[in-house]
Length: 577
Image 1 (cartoon, helix red, strand yellow):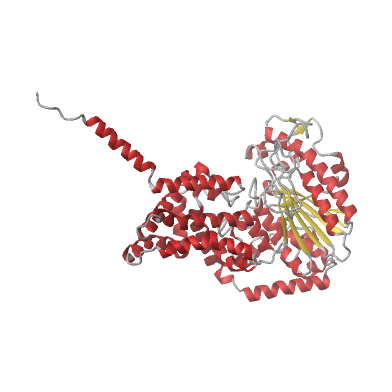
Image 2 (cartoon, rainbow, N blue to C red):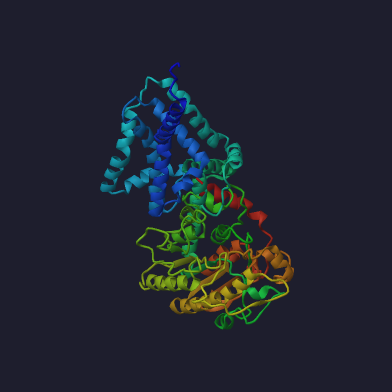
């Protein structure tokens, strides 16, 4: 019999094994695994969420693989070629994460302008570390580039140049394409879009947004004149102002359950201390939003213009940190200590850059969310409740105010506080704050029932805060305002339970409280953007409204939103520079 050939099955098995081995040892797969492990590690240090979720950032993964292929193609063959090609990508990730960990905000291309200033204030030891960890590997990669492959260098660089050029010169088209192929970009967080779409992808997206905003506001940009006007306002306030302290609190979804005409409760949801203090002297303010987007309310309350949301969506997301001279900025120029205390994360609506641009000189966030030894805030035990309780925040702020005012030579204080306890899902830790009441209505909404129980505890916290604050600082202005009403179970709750008897614009009407020099005061309904005018009028003993148009002094709600459009555009033109 003729000799038979060896079976082909073992050879096929060997080829399959070789392919699997080649894939497993592929430099591309190794790079992705390294980045996944790196992002998992950086998350454990308080960085952006990573790990295997990184592999779901398909736009980012595609960009990384292309960059890695390109860099590998232009580097001379060497045993270190794979590592040298990966170095710039790894350094770009590490640099952005260091920025996030140190400053609490996501890096954007425009913030390259801050690098020089950052280096100027960096210690020598840290500069040496930067050189060792960053500059040396990058220089090593450049040293190994084979410049004889210039055709490959140019052709491979072309797609990158075109992408950057598209963001700079065709930003609207760039955003349209991005929205078609990327995951949804939420407007309330700066970090979640990065975690879903990737660091490189969101760099391009944010830069395109900024270019659109710059183009729309170009005719309003005049920094020298804008600076001069801000200083003139501050000098006017120095001369006419009383130098009294101002305490402004924006409360997350502080909706009054008693305003639902079709709802009843097994007991009064308003705490007796609150009812005794304010009675029927609670006012209303018109918020620009319903159900969400706290920063829109903050923008109006602090900047004094309507939140038209005409640029890159939510206004706070457009701020870059350059001076925009909203109310806090004006007060600082007039000699005030302008302080913001935010009970949530600094990446919530780009808070750090927004607060810097608005004019705050100090910003405090709970230590659980920031690596900052100077912060006075701590969330405390949030087990079963998610967000920091108002009373806990107020107690810490009271001590801060007491310390700030202890020095007789201390500058006047603008004390801004943002609460978060009333945010969805409105849960209570029943051991610390047991349910005290039930909702009675034909239409059932368990969300409203939870809100009503929350309101009982929150209204007590407000009454305690106001009582103690007026004892510490009796000759001052205190304002507490709800950012917006919560979404509850939906619009049906507001309609069927007749919130404010379903009057016009009821979904935008929010509770507001004024305490002037220790006495509760009531105004006619105002807009959120009227609050800076009320503050300036108080500080100037009424002179501000004698020189400007103020509807609240005549118990009127002015329909002046459209009249303030140019002022809004001018402010935003300088906030996004």
